[in-house]
Amino acid sequence: MSGAELLRWLSDPPAERGVRFALPKQGWEFHGYRALAQRAKDAAAELRAAGVRRGAVVAVIRRGGPEFVADLFGTWLAGATACPVAPPSAFGDREGYRRHLETVLDTARPAVVRCDGEFADVVGERDVRPRSLPDAPALVQFTSGSTGKVRGVRVSRAALAANLAAIRRWLGMTPADPTASWLPVHHDMGLVGCLLAPVVTGSDLWLLSPGDFVRRPVRYLECFDAGGARLTAMPAFGLAHIADRVRPDQVRGLDLRSWRAVIVGAERVPAAVLERFAALLSPAGFAAEALLPAYGLAEATLAATAVPLGRGWRAQSHSRDQPAVIGCGTTLSGVTVSVVDDAGRPLPDGEVGEIVIGGDCVGTGYAGGQDFGDAVRTGDAGFLLDGELYPLGRFGDSVKVRGRAVFAEDLELLVATAFPDRPACALGHAGDRPEAVVVLERPGAQDASDEVTALLRPHLDGVRIVVLRAKPGLVPRTSSGKPRRAALWAAYRSGELTTP
Image 1 (cartoon, rainbow, N blue to C red):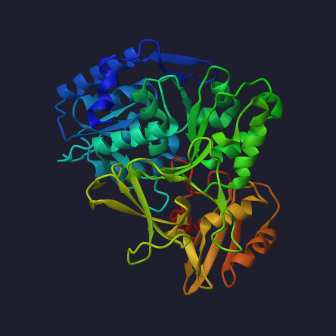
Image 2: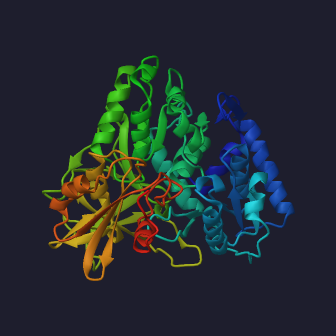
Image 3: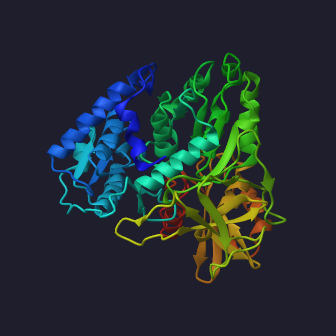
């Protein structure tokens, strides 16, 4: 797929297919591809009339309805660069959103901001000196911010097209393969994997908001009933939410035999969550082999490695006393992956090092910052074994215990076996001594400090362990739901995290 093919569907949109946007309580609003193509052309004309030219950045702050699709493709038709931005609803408070928006707009420097009217008071009038990007990328795609300040990745049209082609080839996507998604469309997994892939393929798409999914996950499952959707993607906590909230009797009336792919990414994947999800849905015909753990990041457009269709997932231990790690498959077409030491030298199979991604899908660099060159050093730890990648976590989210790295994600998985409340863990140093702070969002529950400490002590010899309870929503998370561990550590050290 070439960059030009991203827009090919606009000249000959499928007559009967399109996007179904979930209405607030029930039902769907259908927008056919012909109507969406016309809206995109109208948006492009408006942008050109506003003076937007090649290399200019257009920030799009929408909830994810037909206006978002029109603005995204309209920006590309106008030859400009799209910068999808999370709406205020993705954040817990408006002041936090204002700070996030300041960072995003100061980095992207858009010539135009396209937003829903309800957001106008938050966006406001801003004195932004527009930036013209000489390479005119398709996207300025912001990272999740799980490790600190968000950064805007310049994704060229060629890289976007290459990654979309690799995803479609991996999944065997055809126009007869509908997708359903509840993921935010402003971030890489929801944007590239669950919006752009079906749209450029010309397949039907069901889109719910994250709030729709949280409130009524069975509504999402109903999209995959007989004759419905076949493909989707989500983080592991989405699978856990379904397993926790959907009753077996709600599943019995569904026919899920056509559901053939659930891409699982964005965070460490617990084996227990995969097993619970498959056990819940198997009476309706769902096949466990449809669960496809994958690894990717915004700097590589989206997907880098993935479990092949129909093979099933695998688990390996990277250390004798640590939880097994779920493999995230082999490289997609056009992608290279290596694991290197501190000096950048490739490591042999089974040895833990930094994951490096290269190939056609890698972005050009950060907006206003460094270029990536031929490959990007991810800052993620992992190991390769028989061609499969096993990601462990961020090097910045680990401490050394007796000469080996212990990762926050490992500790969260251990705690979740006893307290399935999306525990969040941050690691750092207070003076010369390493510390681990574990936060359980469990209002009104009894103190669990002793139990959690006993669970973690064999893995954290010599490390001070602090266990806190917090009200739901107090743990700082990215707009895609991952703990912002650097912010969590800072909140703990400043005394902002207190037991209710």
